[in-house]
Amino acid sequence: MDERIKRHQLISTRIAMLVAIAIIAGWFYYDLFVNKIIRYDYMIVLSAAAVTKIGSMIYFRITN
Image (cartoon, rainbow, N blue to C red; front, side, top):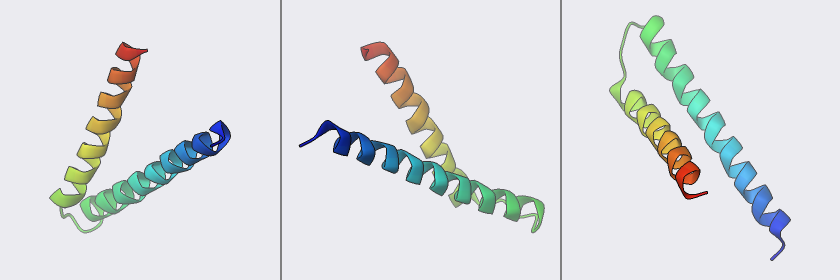
């Protein structure tokens, strides 16, 4: 398999993840500021994404 295909799959997955996080964050802040409701399920998903992102960045920094 060509390396470019795998690279394009990686980039498209990363972009999709960032868009999904932005949408979830938008919903979270909309509910927080407009409706005055804290949605903990959105906050948990955003926190899990942030911990995973930072953890993988640290792991790849240490191993490379």
